[in-house]
Amino acid sequence: MSRKKIHIDKNNLKLIGTRIKSIRESVNLNQDKFGESIGISQGAVSDIETGKIKPTKPILLAIQYRYSVSPKEILTGEGFSFKKIKYRSMKVELGPSSIHEYTEEISTPPDPMDQIINGFKQLFHDQNTKIEKLSNLCKDISERLSSLEEHIK
Image (cartoon, rainbow, N blue to C red; front, side):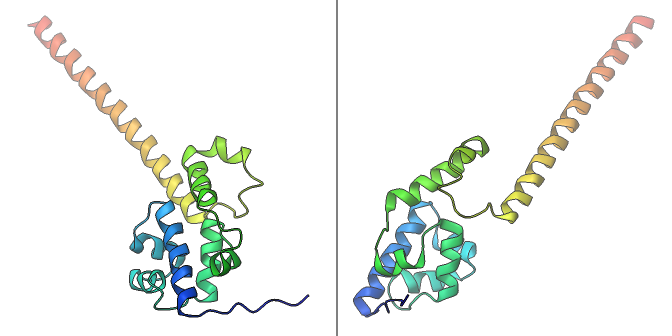
């Protein structure tokens, strides 16, 4: 099975950049955050989006992993769909119960770093809830002691 070589000229670079920009915009990220998500700088994202440089294979694979858009879709436009990217983003925002319904459509596993961050958020939320309950309990005890002192006098 032979692979077809993709010819990339200046016009194609601009189209590739436009596709990558549409991926970034469809998930509502600025260039800095998008670059961070795929391991490159904001300047590199800008250069790719404007067609100044060609995205490398590792960059294309990072985009595929994070946003489920294949290098072929980005380079050729074949099968590229704005709706597909937005739809995947929407499913992730809906939460865990919705993700299970679409397991076949999402080919990449959840990002381990996101799972760790969510775990810490839950832990801090639980701790804050406990602290709030303890604080309320202390206030209640303080009020009862004050009431008891007044009653004794």
